[in-house]
Image 1 (spheres, rainbow, N blue to C red):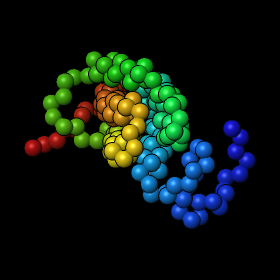
Image 2: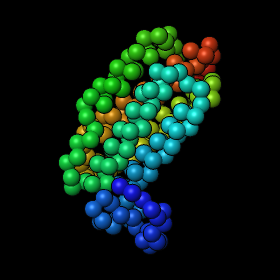
Image 3: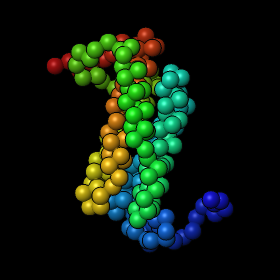
Length: 179
């Protein structure tokens, strides 16, 4: 694919095109889900611009690709692209377990604070959770690949553990909710 022109003027009426040219409203469930995934990927780019552990960086690079795979499948709903694989979910689970094994057990809810990298990881987690809600809304209208929901659910867990791990690695004490 080669893009030579950024604007087309075709969206000036509040519609946008899907992969095979179908026009849909920009406030449709599908486009809302696209937007949330796009925002999530952008926040992950901000995280990658910060100082975060190399184990996290490696996994985030893979995650950004998978988010584009999910977007590709959303853009071509009538196709069975199967770009997202069970192994992608498994990779997140392994990364969560690896990082979590070095962390002390949770005592209470963690406030999103600490290093810049960790705070941006928490922001990415919150955007990820919204993306999940948007995918659930779309899935209620048009069934999605179940791996999309599994992956995004696991991704929010990975981002939470990564934020904790990044602070831990930097010697930053967790700020817990005081009841």
